[in-house]
Length: 456
Image (cartoon, rainbow, N blue to C red; front, side):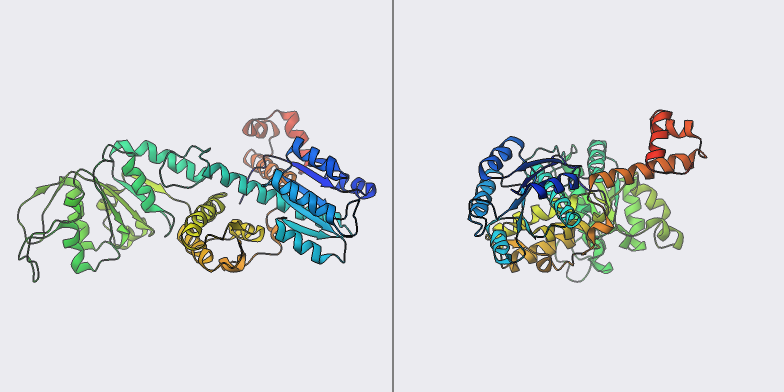
């Protein structure tokens, strides 16, 4: 999964030791790194550059032993830049100060002596968390233009689907939504309805897998009085209830063969017959259906009518699982937490950095439904102000950086290498043709090949 693009690469290092500053200057040469050695210069630099991440040595003069100056700066920085990630740096025997700083609002801590490579990983992770939170804020503040009500997403994959829904909605064609359970198929069906000319008419949904076969026909098509034992009055089915509006048939892959024929007749003739009736009743309804099953395979095995499949899938939309929606998991988690914290546990204010990383990296086999359930449970059970991976029942991989590099330079080089290798492979190592595919000049491609040490 790709990381969220970093918007602010400014790092502020607050440290009075010139030797350490000189060392860290080279360690963080790929950031816009600013330095400050005392409270006045630290606050002035913070106001001027609004750094995303700050490292703060608590042991600053005039009170290097008791960390009072460091805590004073910490409180002022939190007030000035509440979104910035502050990593406090303490002496090797000052763990108590470090823990206290976390309680006061610091993002993380690091104990001396400084290992530049370890600190670099902590800083890179802090930038990643900052970017995820900023992306979420843009969503909640309405800065992103989401055309579909109820859809929370910023990934290119889901935004393309939203655009397709907007195009399809006015066309009044029968639409099939394909995707795993819990991916939000009903929300997209509602979006189709809300963006169509039928939006002021009923939206009626029925789950074809949740109703026994002997009852499903009467639920869909209604029944006449006396049609069967207990039918004491005429009752309208879902088709008639949705007249002039939209009927959403969820889990259409579980529709029995006997009812598939009746549904096909409706799609062809636009009339229904109630159970126990003989009268043809015209119904004007748009059908949207959804399934997590492989309908083409069911057609081959004889479980699903081929002619019905083609009638239902005038347009098909494939909805990707949550693990393939870049950055959406954290946005959704924030939205769910806001919803359930207000309802169940007002003291919960957010997620720990470890929880955010775990949400971003977890594969979410149960998709959005699983995410919502875990956040809801955590909002109820949380003991502190921030939800942890344990409270989400997620295990954080201690080697996350080995799985997906957070350093932007490493990510960029990986993407460039992949694109160049693919282009050369597609053109049989013809540099001119590969350059044309990549949209760059031949000298630029030669430079990339040399920089990335690709053998041509």
